[in-house]
Amino acid sequence: MQSLNEIRSAFLGYFEKNDHLIIPSAPLVPQNDPTLLFVNAGMVPFKNYFTGAETPPSPRAASSQKSVRAGGKHNDLDNVGYTARHHTFFEMLGNFSFGDYFKAGAIEHAWTLLTKEFKIPAEKLCVTVYHTDDEAAELWKKIAGLPDEKIIRIATNDNFWSMGDTGPCGPCSEIFYDHGPHIAGGPPGSPDEDGDRFVEIWNLVFMQFEQFADGTRRDLPKPQIDTGMGLERIAAVLQGVHDNYDIDLFRTLIAASKELVGGGSNGPSHRVIADHL
Ligand code: GLY
Image 1 (cartoon, rainbow, N blue to C red):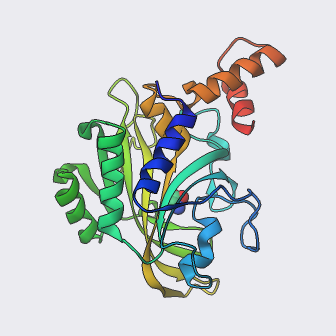
Image 2: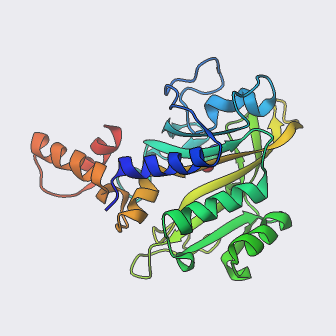
């Protein structure tokens, strides 16, 4: 079994081998960005590279960014402890292209890493694209050989990602892993999509715009790539468990929590404590 630490290293190693500069996680409190209280995604420390306000140290980068989602636009607080897949505090694995590769490169890298390096069977995966994004749908067909029924078009904001009320944004394509029919839930876009069966493991954002507070949007200087994969979610897949709280890291934390505060059940309280730790 690959440990969480080994999975993080394998992700970063793959992108380093493919000419990405590995950037250490930034602090959780954003530096020089008053629009957010906490970093909520891997791209936040790179916001100025996307908008063109600063020059990136390399046209390609990758990181494992500590993130908090406990308020604001991306708020998972109420789900924590009750679903198999939500956290307030987690690590987001990401690869970034600052005006270098775009949709084809992002899809190619994601598919190669998941199916060749991590050896996830292709039949366990399906993807979503923004409903008008014919280009991304075609690329999934060409690069991954996915049939039409596994390329699901979504018209909502689930497939149009933005950092917050302002900042870089664009259509996105999400990759889902099917944990199997024994788990309740349906594919993305279905009435049961909120169940834990089909879990979004990786989001590929095709950054094209900058959103301003007055509601206007401008094109970014160049189209760019921002991706985000929850380390704890991919660890659950690769460790053969369906629940994030059953991965090596959380088993250890939950055991420690039970020992210190007592209580034998695997109920939400120990999961919440482990999440916050
Ligand atoms: N920035 C991509 C994501 O948070 O899903």
